[in-house]
Image (tube, rainbow over all chains, first blue to last red; front, side, top):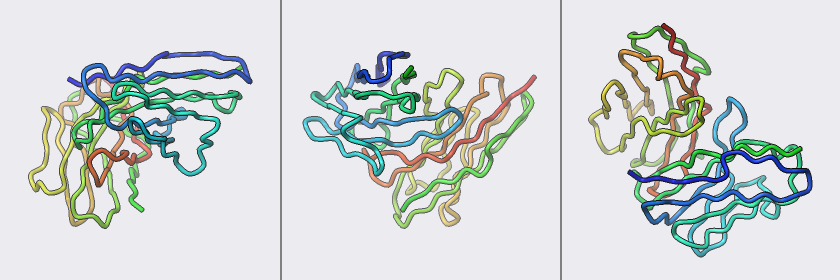
Length: 115
Length: 114
């Protein structure tokens, strides 16, 4: 079946530094990738949608300069949290799709802690 | 705007029993797709079951089945013969167009005890 690999699974960084999270589709070409943020015991909040070779579309309220998304190939999307602050600490999940309504595959998530 | 509502924040059930999780949604579209996802403590999102709105037959996957009521915009999940491994947060999700982002409900935390 379709597999999406997300790395790192956990990261701790110092306030003011940047951290990059990778989302890679291993056995299919992902025309679209989604990035979600999830707080403990809450639902997934869509942050942005990225299509290969295009600029990401950010949801209202998401700072595009803080959360940089790059979808340079059909198998790789990255989320870079720039100048991270403690309030950016959260669980980030990516999802990839081929464009078929059946093809939503999720990465295993990244727990970001900013100290 | 499309919305997905899960009105049960928490539910508990004993092993081998049956439990039903509720989900309602709001859309003006006639064709769309509905999903139930399971998120265990590992936090990996796992697809449980999916349903296309144009299909009248309710989807089933082993112990998991849905009751899809299109007119009522209801999409409940029934788990039969509950197992300890079913303990997880369950999310109902919706999309009206293939390849667009899923809209999630707030989730229901299900606890299965022995």
